[in-house]
Length: 99
Image 1 (tube, rainbow, N blue to C red):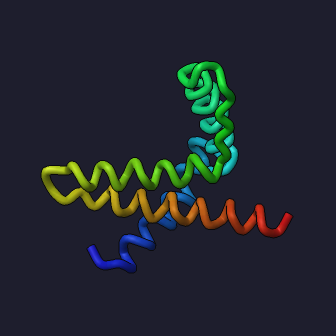
Image 2: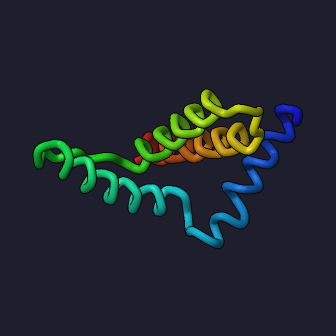
């Protein structure tokens, strides 16, 4: 798969069907951030851990990198997904900067 194909595929995923299925990524990431924050706080001696939608997007990139690191074979979907998560993180960063 060529780099333009990876990026085009990621673009179709993060701007198309997944939005219809799960809603806008930043909204979904906000919910995930709340769940993960609650979970981490409970396992951190009750000390608050407050994650943001940006944290979720970047941690999902790390998740995909972890998958790529341990994969027994090249799995192109992890590259596509990582590109999509980076794009979502970039959009969130842009929105934050414009506030």
